[in-house]
Image (cartoon, rainbow, N blue to C red; front, side, top):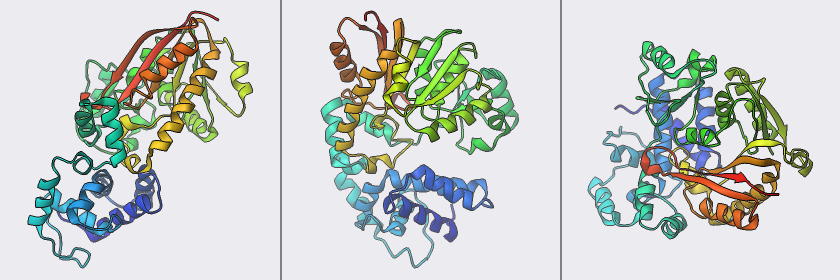
Length: 399
């Protein structure tokens, strides 16, 4: 691989925006690539993947180079050494003793926080909540995320989409355990494809694709997706309903629901999905006892999706996680009132922490004793190959 100065500069500038200006990595990369439309696919991939890699291994690279965490040229140099890429004779790359570089690594192999490049508090919390399982999970969370598509069965079936992509030299695997998923063999910008523009698929991790079916919806039902966001799971629910029924998508952020409306139009699900902004408690009050099914995909730490959002390692804090747990319980207590007697509700997170998952369900069931019963809960761990997700299905059995 040959390094080019302009592309390396783009990586360094992106890292500055992420670490110094505290912007989200995905938004930074999106902006940089939009500003430079003439870059080819290989150049774009280099910028995106190298930036994400350095964000992911930031603490490790700082340690190995013995440099300041904001010396982004030095961190790019560390990335080159780590990946056996020869560094050009640029003034930004001073001489490095590679022997010392790898000696430092040998010395910290047994120190999880540096080896896996995470904050001390995260290692302590992971160990406290998951015990010995934490080591395998944090290792898995440092792997690059696969690109997974969810076939929009309102418009096409999986074999036909797989064949269409194959004809364009995009090879995708169809895993048995995820009936609507296609996993790309090679990473690429799939959003430029006509099939995406035509609404034949969405990009959605395989773990995430388990949640909508877990709600056990049937055509004709009234379903509330109460924390819909931009609507990945809402759209999956619409396809499971075969557009026969009603989905009310709620969120506190109107801009997210605007994005959902665009996606619903593309997917051919606009007639099934109605959006409402939660701008007061009246919105929930008006919907009491009205839903056959409720999905509560609540805000969470996002620890299960760190491989997809590596910058969250450096943005998260223990204080944020404590605050979010209060919000999770509030949503469970308040939004569950929208469920009809005999209806089903799924509580889900993209966290792997029991304190955000099983413990929250236990507390809710205890608070509402005799009103709800737990039917089933499932945890998908990152070590299984996809993002980490938790889901618990409960039935309303009393007033």
